[in-house]
Image (cartoon, rainbow, N blue to C red; front, side, top):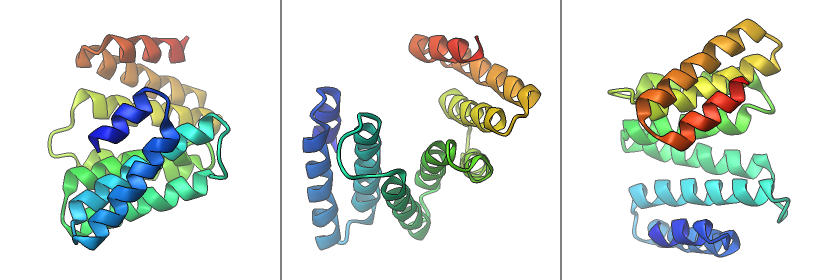
Length: 169
């Protein structure tokens, strides 16, 4: 997984997808479920970047399939953190196409965390703010947007605090 993050950082996401595909094959061949979970997640994240860049034949549907596979694997090995992350990822993808499903995934991801942390809360609240905004529920959207900002402030990560405050603007 390390090489994938390096390729994505240097904008060679196509190479990152190829590495994720290799990791998927290797994990399948060695029955490494944890590795397979991580490879599916990495490929889904790389595809999301390519989709946002308008490259390739992929769609949100292919990203959802990969995140759902990662979720099933995490559930099969009782990896609560992996399940939580998969739900957050699914919530993020669904936020623009079906806010109700997105909210369900975000809330389930949040529920599965043993000790919710500020970054996870930020992710959950941000997606919830976006979903409520898409549903036309402005007050709920602003409420969760404020909660996202508070969680970002607690996290100490400056870039997340700035983005959160911009989204309330």
